[in-house]
Amino acid sequence: MKKLFLLIFVFILISGCTAKPEIKIFDNEPDDESAVAFKIIGKGGEIILEVWVEYQENLSVAELSEKICRAKEIPFVTSGIGAMRYVKGINNLFEFDEGPESGWIYAVNGKIMGMSSGSYIIQAGDNLIWRYTLDLGKDAGNGLEN
Image (cartoon, rainbow, N blue to C red; front, top):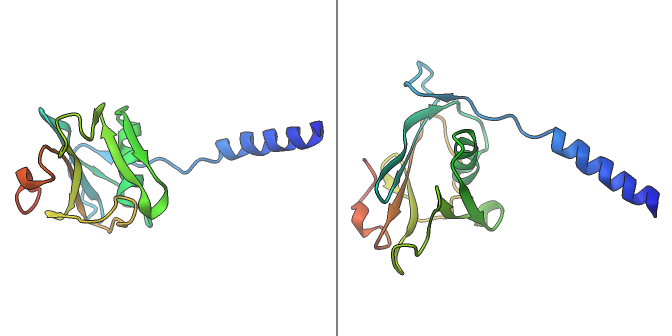
């Protein structure tokens, strides 16, 4: 039994050391057209001014957002896994904090996405914006341009 426990402990320790590489963040728009633009707008204004990140294949909106927030030391709270991943809070601002219709929505290339942030896979050159809404997105209009 002790050997099994030790084997599991060593596996967990090794697994933690092989984390996915972090993402490269640029404060100014790079020449690389595949870079992804990223912004977070909270209740009182911008949490992350527009930054650009190095494009990485097969990252969902949730995965990319989590990497950026981790690098910027901004709390990022989700529930669910995979394609069902849901963002509950960013920068300690959570769904329902400002009423029953408040929460986080995101847009890609100006279009509010009607799917889980775990299901949309970021494409090279995408423009991703998160916004805290007070009324299920009606305050964002048809998109999230700013």
